[in-house]
Structure formats: structure tokens, C-alpha cells
Length: 336
Image (tube, rainbow, N blue to C red; front, side, top):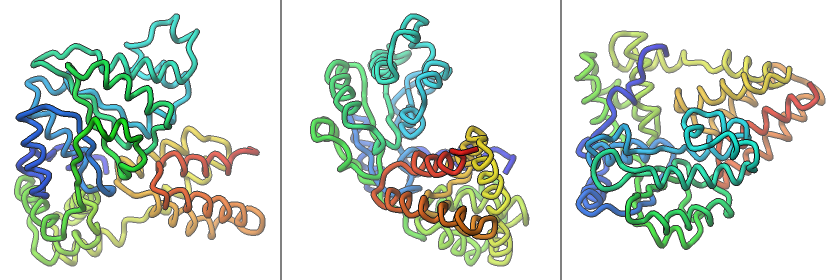
């Protein structure tokens, strides 16, 4: 999908969010800025809701919203953290040389929180996918939240709020973002397709909503795929387009890269599938096994199944999809 993603070009405002309880809760947070824990399943719209809040809360949201994807940030090496353009401005050459990865992460958290707002009275710092934060880093975050509570709003998004330590949960108001119903998903799609000038019918929209199964991001991207391939979103068009969306080439290439030791390329493909295409970890794991059965046999296939079993358990625990699938890919290429 080379065109701009509809999830970006049609980013919702607060009033566009499908869940009325979320709209009401965020409106209250506008009147009285407060720390939030925004929790719910994959694809329910947690990050979109937080960005909608920031756009209405800040006159200059581009500068007064600091986003840290925990899955990305905490999975980085020390070198990657220090060289990433999002964080390098906070890290001097001396600190880069003399600090551990943990020190760098703590420093970036502190500097992000202390960043002076460009407009208004406070900055919003978003920690996305926060179930991946280790407890020692959570303790550091707690101290940062205490130190900068007067000038920084912390918004934490997670699938599992119970993974957060009690001192953090007690400092945040909870916002539960349930998966949208099929009817709510259809309403969102109707609005986007009208803006795009794409024809649709009720059967096609219901098919896309059912295909996404409560994952709003997946539904929007599926509608975009159908529109780009067929020029409309009808039942026949959606069925044909979405049945033809095969992961085989991407997954096969990812396995080939991993097996040959090209872990950076393998992880790049994984990121594309998880982030850009909106696939969930368990869904990709099933595809890895399916494609792997056609590629491998004997000991190689047995190894893949053993690794997949471990990763499936970890995914069911609700921890980070990217981290665990990356580990599987790294293990496949360990002897390359």
C-alpha cells in the first residue's frame, strides 16, 4: 500500500471517536488536564484517541505532544537509542559514551517530561504500548511523574493496565477503550469513504467490519485496500480484495532474511506488518507457521514449532508482540 494510509489522513477528532464513553472521558480531561491510563484491546483506537485529545488540548500539538512507543523504545540497543533522531537531541556525546542503556532511557524519559511547552501551560507525554515497560523503568517513570506533575501530562496506553505498578496506576485516571461494534465500525468507514469519494454498499461495509472483528485500524486499512484495488467497497469487491491479500511473500522473505542472519531486514518487515498493515501478533505467528511448513522440514520445522509455542504463550500473556516475534526471528538466524 503505497498511498498515504487512511488511518493517518483521516485521524479522528474527539467527536469522531466511535465510543461515546471515551468521548465523554476525554472531554473531561480537556477541562482539567490529568494523567491518564488509556487501556483496551489492539486496534480499538487507543492511540488515535490520545492524539485527538492532544490536538484539542494544545494550540501547537506537533511540538507539545511527545510520543514514545515503548515497544520500539525499550527494545532498542544503547546505540540505537543514542542515535535515534527523536531522542538524540536529549543525549550529549559524553552521556552517550559513559551511560548504560538503562541510564539513557531514564534520561530520555526525564528530558521528555521536562521539555518546555511551546504553547499553553503543559506538555503531553504519551507512552504507547506500556505493557512492555520493565518494573525498574516503571519506578523511574513514577519518579519523573512526581517531579514534573505541574507541567507535564502523562498518558499511558496499554492492553494490560494490570502490568503497571500500583504507584503509577494511582497517579492516573483510567480510560477504558472497548473494541468498537460492527455498527460503529461501519459508521467510521462510511464517513471516510464519503470524504474519499468512494462508492460503497451496506453489504460491503458489513463484510469489512466483520473481517476486522473489532480492530478499527484493520477495518480502515482493509477498506483502503479494497478501494484501491476495485474502486469501490461492495461485498464482491471486498471479498475479492481481502481474500487476495496474501502475506506469503512478505512472510517468506522475512523468514529468509532471519535464517540468513539479516535480522535488521527481517525486523523491518515485521514492523511493516505490525505497524503499517495493522496485523496482530497472534495472526502473524499463524502465518509464520503456515508459510514455514511449506519451507522447512525435519529439524528446522521442529525448531520453528518449538519457538512458535514459546512465543504463543508469551503473546497470550498480553506482552509485547514485536519483542516476542523479533526473538523468534533472531533465534532462527542465530547460527547463520
